[in-house]
Image (tube, rainbow, N blue to C red):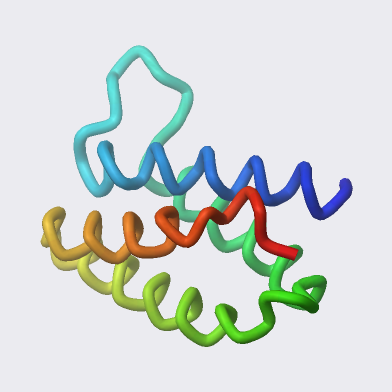
Length: 96
């Protein structure tokens, strides 16, 4: 999968996490907290080594993901969502 496609997937997973994590996933959806967090981790693992122009943002995204995962695990939706929005607001679809 290309970097652009993975960035789009990452942005989508971030968007879902920002509103649904940790426990507001619709019952009718195939997406669950576990699936969404796994998608975020997998996308970021693919994207991270490919970033050249925006390598300076890698550490920030790493830190915010750790903060979000930690907050969601403690059921702190507000703190987790803030960390996810901080990443999303970098314009992740445009990272290179």
